[in-house]
Length: 107
Image 1 (cartoon, rainbow, N blue to C red):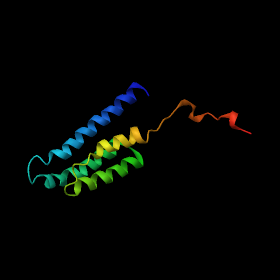
Image 2: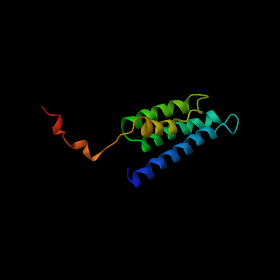
Image 3: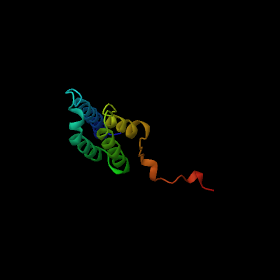
Image 4: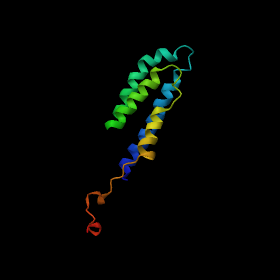
């Protein structure tokens, strides 16, 4: 993995943690949480689609929107979970040998 890709990977983790904290921060002021979610739910879904491209980003956006829109579910760190899914549980490794045909396996 190049340094640039590694930097972007950890920048996404850092931003994800910040976005999860923003989702939690609405609970600091009593009664403000569910009102602020009207704004934060669509914004967090949009941010998820910008951070993670493709189908996984879209599915993550839907999950984030639902999690933020439902009452009392803001404690779920969806951005951090998405980072873990993308880079730990389901990493896509692109080696230079991916496009090479293994002739030793042919019969």
